[in-house]
Length: 309
Image (cartoon, rainbow, N blue to C red):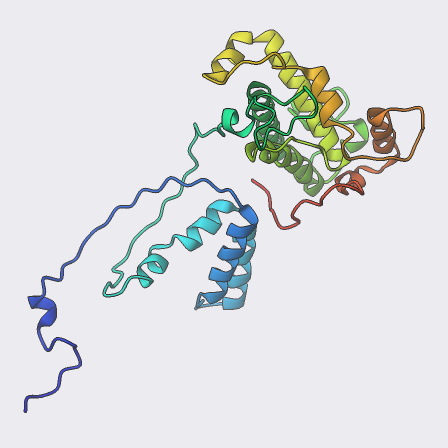
């Protein structure tokens, strides 16, 4: 009998079977629709990794924190070439790289997310008023712009206080009440996230209902900026809308104030005051550190959602 071979097809099968080295390029277009689910999957993947070298426990801890805060990092772990190839039988990974970039021109389909027919699921309308695709699009753009500007403020000024007379040098934090001007960097970062949280609501087809005082302030700022932009640059706003359908309630800012504020919020206070007045009283009476505590009747946002920057 011949000498036994451990290869299932005998010695030399690799050469004779036509096996070859292949370079594969895969381009994926992805949309994150459930960040908590993506984050959980990425954290589970990190727990399965073997870390070597100095302080492997610290490496794991750092990567867990990174994938918990950054969707790109979470995708990077799940889409790593070694992980993908490991699921394929008969293939060895010879190496590879992964590049992830955010599509700059991506925008939610607001016509689909906020259909004008109030009977369609997801319209969210109350009575005859509804948040129209064009209003949602413009408000979404302002919320993202304010979040970007807030993070830019942080990068430029770090923990510096806003100084009276120099508030114009700040894109966002100089517009906030003066008692916030000396607050620390982590507070400012949470405020920047409040704009993103409301923008994320819109990107999911939900009304941006403020769930805490900080989000009340953020939404008021976005509505003011949207109103100002529409008045100053109507052509730019028209270009932004593209083919989104027009409607009678487009840019109905008074309707936005009536319908978006007060769904959640304080019920105590002056019985003769409206929801906006009670909220303003609460903000005035609460230290800014407490502005991120959710209203009693509002669903708390995911505490592990992280920050965009």
